[in-house]
Image: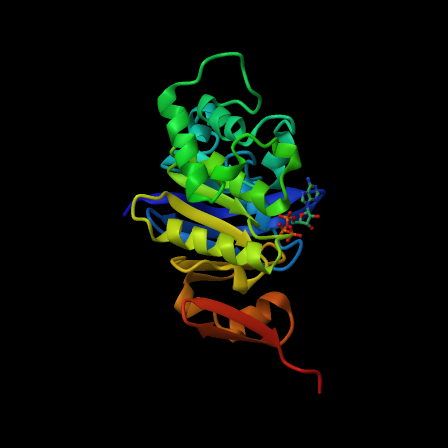
Length: 263
Ligand SMILES: Nc1ncnc2c1ncn2[C@@H]1O[C@H](COP(=O)(O)OP(=O)(O)OP(=O)(O)O)[C@@H](O)[C@H]1O
């Protein structure tokens, strides 16, 4: 299996502080990783490196076989799908849901007065359908609820047929039903052998979709644990990661965590 992402001794330093500190991590083809860690741990910074939008201050980052600094990122970026708040902010609010997804195929955020290929439109409709958005095709992106917006962004990220899919807190801000709906859909995607390799950032073990295979835990920019989910997602590691005693339970295909009561 080839490496989709390989970080070797990577640090990101800003104002003399290491936001990501000497991180070595590799993601192989077909793996589905979750990045877990408290606020400010460096999760989004890692994802920004993986999406080729941020270059390390030190160390080497290789994405889809291409070393950052030696590759034209404009060739690399279409091979990576990114769904997160940063992307949502770039998209025009007046654009319809279908246009929002369709423009991804043309490397654009805004619509253009051109006829889109019927093939692309069919693909956009199919991705939106898989994410339960068929009824919203003509709705303006700016009028969507948080959950609907997140599902649209995932469909958009899939549109370029990426080899690597990055999801930044896809379930943040969703109500229980919205979260469970999204987790089930991501679980189905994670189990699809034709789906891209995936990396998802989250704060909550309850948001880990079934089918995700590996976990990276990060605290204060440093890797605390990285490896297969069933080995590394332990009460001990999670307690160290979040800085208080936590108990993790594996229930069916999902995880839950809770703090021990104060004595
Ligand atoms: N450009 C920057 N200059 C200085 N500090 C920064 C910069 N970008 C991020 N940081 C800091 O780096 C740290 C890591 O940020 P990052 O967004 O990667 O954390 P995170 O784990 O994604 O956090 P959260 O869970 O709150 O989203 C934070 O303390 C943040 O304030």
